View 1: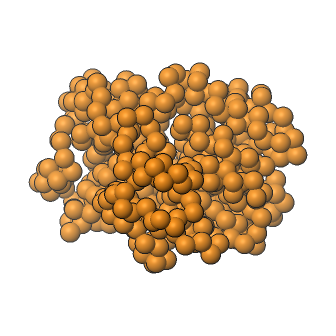
View 2 (view 1 turned 135 degrees about the horizontal axis):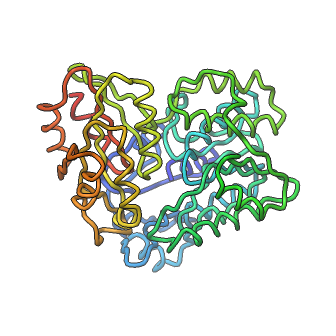
View 3 (view 1 turned 90 degrees about the vertical axis):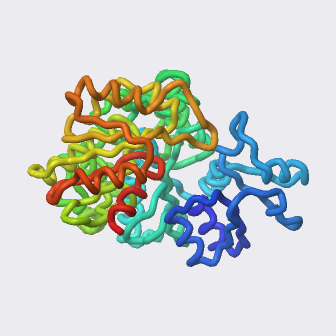
Length: 414
């Protein structure tokens, strides 16, 4: 939503917003651009002279009440979701959409930086802050649009890209997709939307991706990390795959390999993607958005490869009750590379406040793999106090999750 606000403001549109009181890095982005944001939701926040209201789809979910949405409907104002507005932008531009279960934000950022380096002057929308831009958006003035395409609630079916980058397929969002078959079908529909004159860049080793791209009407190019002969600043085998996806796409657009390699070699990463937060009393603090079992595995593997001699404390905050319940067994085996594991309470969402599973259930499952080296601690504050006593110089505290677990490193740093 913040990226969208920046793009609309860049078009000379007066933008006003409202949000929860919780703080995000995007607050500083909006403040710098002097985009006013009201804390809390109230029907009084909706101006009488507003032309259009854009709402997060979370506040349109069944059972979720929002006084501003109610007021908008009462006033009879036009109401669109983020995905619907982004869909309109795709219609105006030569759109490159990055979709898949994993790697979307990183590949979108990499591809945006490559196009910027090549002089394409793209507009780019990323799901997190790009370190080099200090923002989650880049406002370009060309016909090129690079955007992260989220599958949740079939959002990306609003888009009409010319190019699709398809990273991987693993079951996710069980609160919306009842099973993997339904999840896979929405990607098949997206693949079929790419026009014959467009092209798809697909993960050459993901069997489920290869199954989905059979439905394509356009040319398909597969990518593999062995094409890449550069050293990245960002760690992990998964980032070689991400860089290979960006490089393959850029080569198809006619960008020279030297230009691509320079941009990728300079890539500094994105917020909450293996982000080094600092050191506290000799303890290295790293934060990552990993909230799916596979993401946890590759993040821990990257940490082990980069720091083979250091003991790793993995602090995980499960995100949504439905995901935790549906993938419980997968989560349980994901922490093999961690020396000690701490599980926090499950972080809900605007659409899901409770469920049939508890963080303690995950702890019990992990114990079968970790020989008791796992502990349940309810809150971030309690975890900080525990680690201040238990973690030692030369060790790593790696926080993971899509909620506010990143706050732990902030507490430990001060």
